[in-house]
Amino acid sequence: MILTPRGMPASLVGCVGLLASEMMSPMTDQWSCSHFSIANPRDDRASDLPELLRRLAAEFERRDIKATEILDVTIANEITEDGPWWSATVYWSTDGPKAK
Image 1 (cartoon, helix red, strand yellow):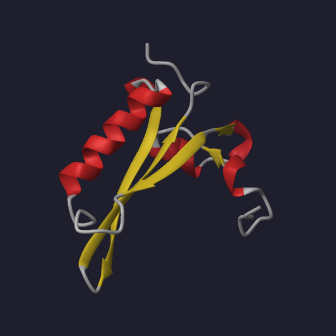
Image 2: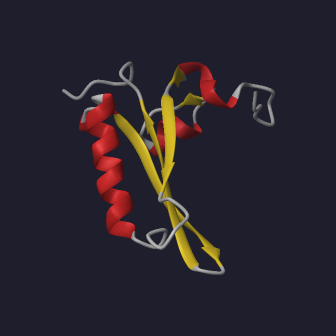
C-alpha cells in the first residue's frame, strides 16, 4: 500500500472543491474521490499524444465517467532516451458538488 506524507492510503486521498477559495479553507469539507492513471505503451507509440487522448476517452466510456464528475485531468510526459512518454491521471467523484 502506498501512503501519502500524512499516512493516508494514496487511493483514499480526499479532494477538495473546485474553487480556489474552497481549496484554501480548512479540510473539513473534504470528500473522497477516485483516480486512475494511464500511459502509452513503452514502444514506438509512447510519444503519440493523440493516441493517449483516444485511450483516455475510451477509459472514460468504459468506466462510465460523466464530464460533470471529473475533478482534474493531468497530462505529463517523461523524457526517455527514445523521446517523450505520455501519461495521464484522472480524478473524479460521483459524490461531489452537483451542477445547478
